[in-house]
Length: 443
Image (cartoon, rainbow, N blue to C red; front, side):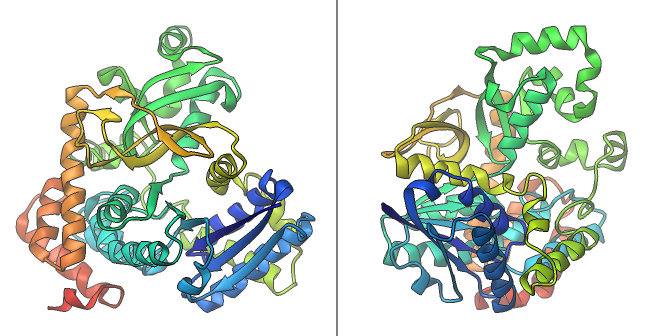
């Protein structure tokens, strides 16, 4: 039997870690390999909880003979012999994420999520870039042949930073692409496996350049469907308003609106599209988070059965993508992966070759093979390149502590309409989040 070691960096993630563990117990990897799952987190309390939860899932699903769960606060120790490292860290946790959104809100700036763009996305990048580079450097030093799969946001910024500064094989993964596939499938009343997308762009702001439904061209079918059943698009008004202009479907979901703040992040647009504003309905919403965390702690302390967690519908969905990816590489089972973040190198014409883009890929034991999807329309290129340059400035600021570079990123970003306001927001964010920043930000 093959031995495979998987490290979860940031294993204190309340939803992602149980999702990956459950997905592993249901995978072919657990049939054909001896798996070691190394849970890594700097927070020992939540690490202990997730270790107990993970062990209980493995035991309850009858996989104890093939899956061994370990826990570490020292990632260098955990990285010995690792084949795959999955990163889901959140520097500053929920508290910092709230600050990213609530401080700009005081200045009249709304962000629906604030983890990718906007002042919150920039500040999140500043916090996370040094941490991701430290993780990648350790992995490259200890297990240089490993794959690093980054799920942490801002995903493009962090994936680009590691590719730019480190040598380890690095890819960015986002669960959102599967939601887009599912959404298209719902529109046509088919199973998700019957939909194949060819996307191009950047994470949280890409475009479906082509797609098929049961092997048939998708866009002609969509046009017919809209004429026959116009109400089918009502649930996705934002997406289809943009489709009318660009003749392409953007994705994923409400993330798209955040990339066009001058149009959508205004009170009238927020009301018209009925946008939920951060943190409503997310795992960062304390009303949602608290009962879920209480359930996990109760299961870990044996006051509630693990079946309550395993029985949650769709629990494995967050982690199933990366598990399928690993399965394909380890077992040489070729697959089409709908969206992976890679160095462009010509995959999307019109965007810089060095930039990180999200495109489909074929995967097998030889690795990940991104698909060249062709050219983006110049109007979409015009929306996308400024973001790519903003991301590059964010990385530069994160690694230098240069506040002017962070302000320059905000000026490209489009949320802040005044330089002095940008300075005040940045200053207040830095002051509130100092404990999670490298010392050079205090200069």
